[in-house]
Amino acid sequence: MTSVESASTRPLRPRRSCLAVPGSSQKFIDKARTLNSDQVFLDLEDACAPLAKPGARKTIVAALNEGGWGEKARVVRVNDWTTEWTYRDVVEVVEGAGANLDAIMLPKVQTPQQVVALDLLLTQIEKTMGYEVGKIGIEAQIENALGLTNVNEIATASRRVETIIFGPADFMASINMKSLVVGEQPPGYDVGDAYHHILMSILMAARAHDKQAIDGPYLQIKDVDGFRRVAGRSAALGFDGKWVLHPGQIDAANEVFSPSQEDYDHAENILDAYEWFTSEAGGKRGAAMLGDEMIDEASRKMALVISGKGRAAGMQRSDKWTPPEA
Ligand code: GLV
Ligand code: MG
Image (cartoon, rainbow, N blue to C red):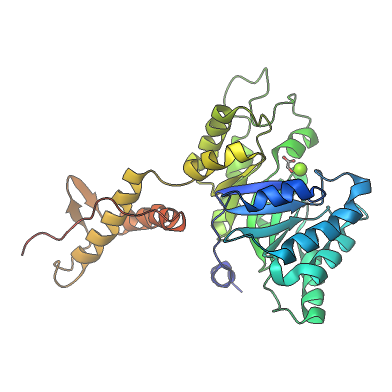
């Protein structure tokens, strides 16, 4: 199986804004239904106290089966494999609500074997319950040095993997970074971006294997400008989306991870123009001028990325290129 084959078998879901919701809170779950995030993930891990986890599994199953999630990707974050909770999280949630669930998020992934273990468990449950085998995706969170070292193998460990997610809070703790402010530079490091290597490693693994790259949380939930600044960095690199912890961060994420109207129009115009110039009517040209700009096959590929993001975000064209008069 090549990564191209594996990618083509999975649905591409918009994930500009991935809303974290504690699985133990009925109030937050009810609120989440009404919000316009692309994804919601109901959390059994760190936003859910150990004593609340058994009850939260039941709350989550009921919430998924009740519906009302619209077009949102529905995801549940289970506990990581080093705990005693993971298998029960998966069995209870997927047996109870697998038909109404798009993916399981696996935190603190360190090795490809941990993804394989989840894949095998999901397959057994799908077979037992009569669900389509392979339908439920996996989102793999990279949260420590070993996980980052293995990120390529993790990305390809199962056909189910849809996203690679950066978990900055756990990551910072695991490498002993001298900072408590997630997303901001550690004091004393004044020569660049301390997260660049981590973000780029995740992005390269995601792009090499046709997965989505998702940035993790920004904890200063009242500081929407700070959120925009940090989200803008990963969006500029090419990330597909970011976690949101509060309704106030959702619009910012949807905006930052969508192309601007100008870039979207430009990308659609490049695609139209390139299609026409390479056609019989347009002279079967490999390179052509669009206004003052030369476009070729590489321009088309770049335009496809922007137009794909814009279309996924439901954008409409405000300007349309027309072929020159013959
Ligand atoms: C998220 O899980 C994080 O650790 O940042
Ligand atoms: Mg974490």
